[in-house]
Length: 270
Image (cartoon, rainbow, N blue to C red; front, top):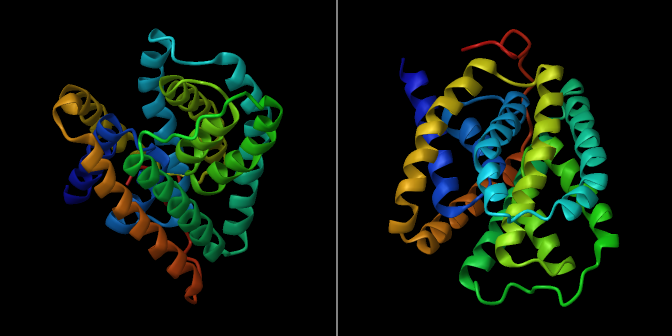
């Protein structure tokens, strides 16, 4: 019962944070599952990516209604992003197969550090987005390929790194950057999460409880978002994520015990 309550609470907190701050689901979910619930990284990444896809399915229709998505640019980015996420998932399963969890910790940690650093930068200097003066769409597909690979390998990266690419290589407005990046993240996380599920690297019961908690969190976050100091909350969350990312990087340098067998828990309710 206590574990179930904690899982519902984490789902609530993640969705609430996304609604209030806009910080990506993939960056937050896997660290919380690993540190607070003790879920093995072999299961956390796939569960986090699937949860990210479900959360974005709720958020993206709002962006569609507001006409904040550039579908042509999404299509260009998917040319690189989809092959990238497939490669990332394959690398993930290979690392798990050969017991190379240190690679997963290093990848997750480095991507969280980069993402949180970008969130902190944009929060501290919101009036200096570095918007491109002209589009460089030819580079987008190539740049999104490693972003997709990072998502497949660690569940993180699309929010901060995708926004960075859009800001520097397109002339989209800030609202269009958010909507287009969310649409890209939905497509990539849907494919990546589906591949992780097919490969068995997820916990179905945990995912369900996260989604239930997340539905209430998204609702409440949407209601109070305009009443809370989102900039200050983004700063606090960015600092916490930076510390978590550095912790993952440190863990990657430490000797790892022999990997536990997780097949009995994969895809099954807790």
